[in-house]
Amino acid sequence: MTNEELWQAVLSQIQLNISPANFATWFANTKISAIDDSVVTVSVPNSFSKEWLEQKYNRDILKILKSLDDNIRDIQYVVNPVNVKIATAGKKGAKKEEETVEQMGFSELEVSKETNLNPKYTFDNFITGPFNEIAYAAAMAVVEEPGKSYNPLFIYGDVGLGKTHLIQAVGNKIKENNPEKKVKYIPAEKLISTIVNAIRGQSVEELKKNLRDIDVLIIDDIQFLAGKDKTQEEFFHTFNSLYQKNKQIILSSDRHPNNIPAITERLKSRFSGGMIADINIPDYETRMAILKQKAEEKDVTIPADVLEYIANNIQKNVRELEGAISRLIIYKKTNGKTVTIEDAKKLLKNIIVTPAKVTNYKKIVEAITEFYDIPSGNMFFSSRKKEFARPRQLAMYLLKRELKMSYSEIGRKFGGKDHTTVIHACQLMEKEDAENEKVHQEIELIIQRIYSK
Ligand code: ADP
Ligand code: MG
Image 1 (cartoon, rainbow, N blue to C red):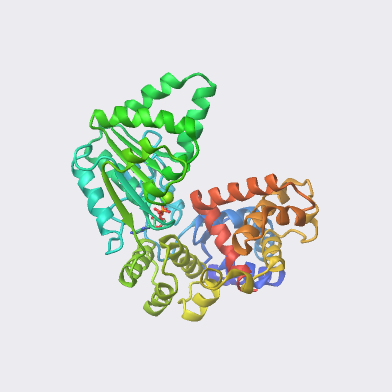
Image 2 (cartoon, rainbow, N blue to C red):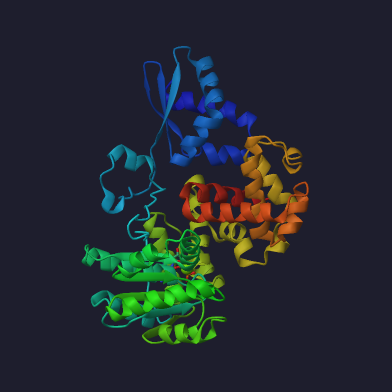
């Protein structure tokens, strides 16, 4: 028997015992790449499949292999991506090559401990068009002469339009040009909690000293300072101190400074004292350019008509554009087939059409319990088993996100859980979804399932 025949024999038995969706998800693009003495090497397309096969299917696969060839004692899984470019791990290149290959497809760039900036936000992958060119030009001017051209630089615009990307790109570029400069990126919520904790722990002086020692201070979503008097007070002094020393301050907000409620007049006037630039909604050409770039980044080909379909239907939010293309990329990678407009319509219906019409509570719960192979009745009755905890949190998150159910409604579905428990679960999963590529892919696979039901 050749390796190929042997693997076909294994697959045909596996296929009998699991659902077609599971089979397609976990066994597409797998093969036996070598047999060395008693060890079979199975190559899989990404580290996500690797982990899944190792954890959930290894026993079954080994049993079948042994029944076909009794010399076989063990299996090892290696990631051998098809059609995927090897992602270079930014400047951190110290990783072993093997490791880089392993993490392929999930090339997670790490947030810098020193600056708190995420290296994935650069000018190289920031697409410009009429909608953001003023903000872009102002940002470039700041990069050229930090502290001298526009201070503060205030960028505002609706959610998902690239504010965080742009202000972090400025930080990354300045740091690249001037490694000695102290650059610090702080989301406003983090600033608030840091100040509150410092007040509580009586370490305000130390915090002040740290903040005033910065060359480029970037605060994201400054609108959250609304109503936070203590933070506003401290921030006002920090702002003045930095400003007087010609240190660069960069701020972002979802609205113009004049429209931020409950913020002191003196801060408003500080915010408006430099350059205020807004980011608008991207035009069609830019939307296409963004989609093309994201597909190219992952080295996946998506037909032009499918890209056009997305660009025509998602108009107001770059994050949604990105979410849509990422969903199709993962679909293409797991199924290997060309993505058609029909596929796109199915996969994107929750983004493009109003969600309530296309899925429901039952479908979401079913998709999750099937995905994790857990009995669907149990998990709702607050079983204490650890293995149910995470699927349950994920279910809460998806019920909120896809159906916009209220927290207390979700709590009731889960055996009368308190709504704060639900909020906690949703926040946790949202964070992981945004920050952990592996979790994101897992969620996308579940979404594929929900919307193909
Ligand atoms: P905001 O902070 O305004 O809510 P983000 O900066 O988080 O938006 O952008 C949302 C997503 O869209 C990010 O992943 C970002 O990289 C991407 N994005 C936004 N604008 C652009 C752009 N002009 N070019 C490329 N990607 C973009
Ligand atoms: Mg943001």
